[in-house]
Image (tube, rainbow, N blue to C red; front, side, top):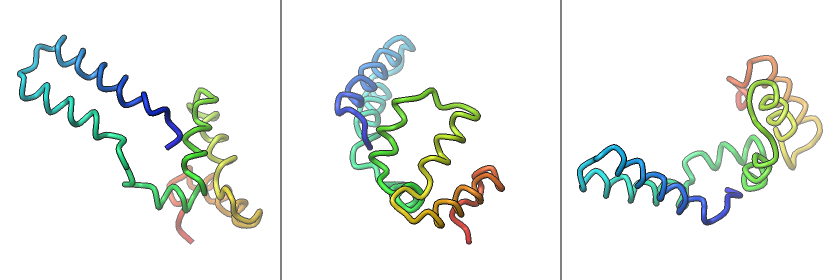
Amino acid sequence: MGRPTERVLRQTVITLRLADAAGVEPGIRAAAYYTSLLTWIGCAADTSELAELFGDETRLYADTHDEDLAGVTMALFIARHLGGGGSRLRRAGLVGRFLATAGKSVCSG
């Protein structure tokens, strides 16, 4: 997903520190540890949808490091990436549907 490998390790360290600060039971702490480690491993839950909309989802995720994505900035980011690798006509159609529906039905039609 374009993220550094160490990201999950950092996330897990933070998870364990939060669990310790909250004083959770050892079993819950262990579940948090393993859940954190598994969060990004081979995650393919939405890969096909992302690939359909944006082309190379790895590049999409890598590009998210470059900007503060909120509000209008997020909308512009998505509009620039919709239909990545596709024809100009397909890209224009996806961006038009995105703008017309505020992103709710980009895949339909």
